[in-house]
Image (cartoon, rainbow, N blue to C red; front, side):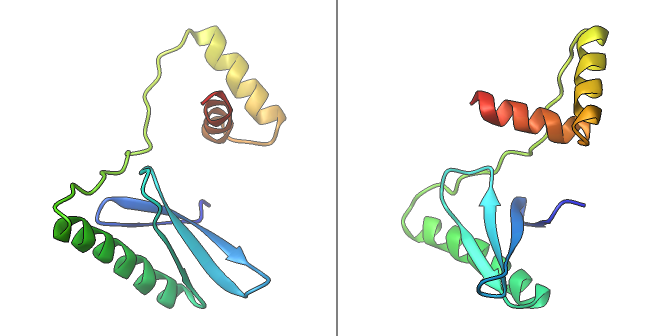
Length: 109
């Protein structure tokens, strides 16, 4: 299960900070940095919504276009042999093909 939330088309990755005993989130897919936190899931969700709403309002007030998030979906066509090798490599590492490919693409960028 991926630790994520979505709101108004924006997706965020959620992590738990054991030192401060809070959940911390970061919006993905845009260059602007939007973070939020909460001690409970309900508070985290409220802060996430507030952070996105504030970001959109701030962009509007400044006459700046808000960045649109990437969908996070990529369709790739590869030869069957490449697909098979990639799936085998991912499985050998205990990962889904999606997880493995995302890590490989992240390292390449």
